[in-house]
Image 1 (cartoon, rainbow, N blue to C red):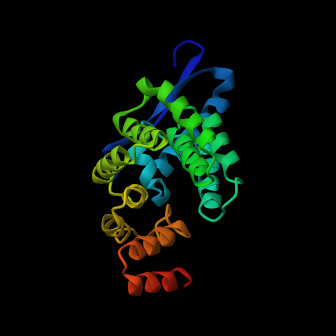
Image 2: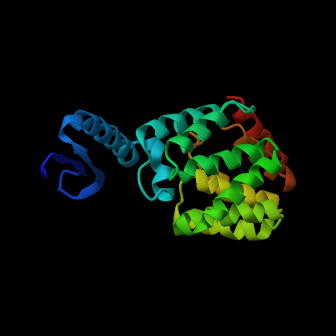
Image 3: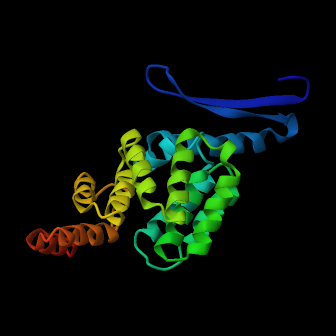
Amino acid sequence: RIADTILVQAKIMDSNKKLLQAIEPIATPAEKIMDAVEAIRKSVIGAFTFEFSERSKDIKVIEIKPPTYEAYQQYFSGIDIFNKSAGTEGLEYFDRAYALDTLFVSALLYSFSYYQNLGLRSKADSVIQFLNGRRSHLNSFQQLLLDEGISVMSGDRIKALIIAREIAEISPTDLFIYGWSRQAFFTNHPREAIEALERIDLESYSMRGWIPYWNFLTASYHALGDYENELQASQMSRQ
């Protein structure tokens, strides 16, 4: 405390007292201490989600710092809809997530993927151009994801595949392995696409209920003339 100003801060540490997250401190007048405590509480919940939730596995690689908890809630709601719907219903959640935390790059990247899947190229390109304008504020991994998107939008699928391989090597999570499989398929590398798809845990949060997985797997087997495995994969997709 300095005069009438109180500094409120928090840290998250593991059982060995290793620092996991240092919450950005808030300086507040003494009469507004409870407002600062509530803000810190929300930041702590967001940081806990970032560190310990299975749903945050992909985000931890992408983000520089934990998003706010409110932004998290909108983001995860968007993913739940994205994985189950072919419509635009989930987009508003990613928009709100980014509006709540403008450092939350993952929300914009999901919006880009959403627009791509819907065939809305101009919207997808707008997201990429917006991110490219903020390139100097992105970390190296975010820049790789951006470069993959730029390559896709420019039609340079070979470059996109090269970048997707690098992304999956740096962070072999199911989401990024799936991204690698997509680029392999689109560049006529069906064996590589299958290799990637077979590594994926379909029960992971990012892939649970994701029907396009089966579309790419069956199409890759078909491209190889492996109709037996294509039929088997098709049957598994209906289970």
